[in-house]
Structures are given as structure tokens and as C-alpha cells.
Amino acid sequence: MSMKKDYDIDDLVGKIDFQSNSFQIINGLLLTNHEIDVLDRNHIDYKKCKSLKEIIYEIEEVLLDMDIVDEELDLVSGSISERDYYMNTNK
Image (cartoon, rainbow, N blue to C red; front, top):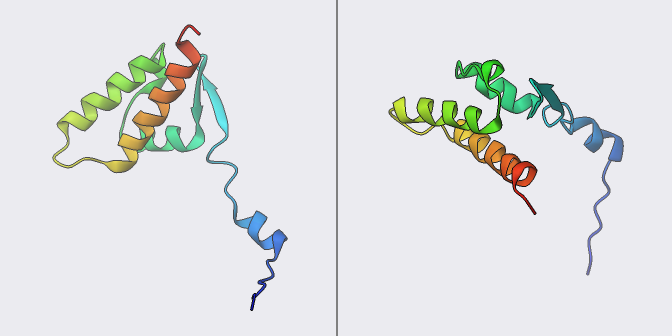
């Protein structure tokens, strides 16, 4: 016996946050709105950085100074690291 559940597509699409994963170009670097928000909350001056590696370095410095690991900041570091790898590695 199979139970089929109906979904309200308009309601589901209305709940999706498209904005936080939208990219912004800051000094030629791609950062999502969410990453920018997390960096701002942690007082990381990404606007002075000229590469994604510099932003990663700044994040790591902040993480080293913390008593506990900020998982959200750690995830942002991983996301930026991944983007840097795929954008700047010779293939």
C-alpha cells in the first residue's frame, strides 16, 4: 500500500533561500552573500584581501584565536578553499 503525499510547489519554492548563495564580486573575488555575512560577523576584513587564499588565512587566524571552533566560520573556510582550488588549479 503506497501513500502519496501532495506538496504545494509554490510554498516550497517560496521557502528556498536563493539570496544567501548568490555570488558577489569583491575585489575580483567571488564570495556568496552568506560567506560575506559570516565574515562580517567575525570582523574579517575580506575587502582588503587580493586572493581567496588571503581570506582563508584571515579566517584561520581568527579560528586559532577562538576558544571553541565556530563551525559556521569553519564551513565558510572550507567552501572558499574549495572554490580557490577549482578556480586556481592548473588542469
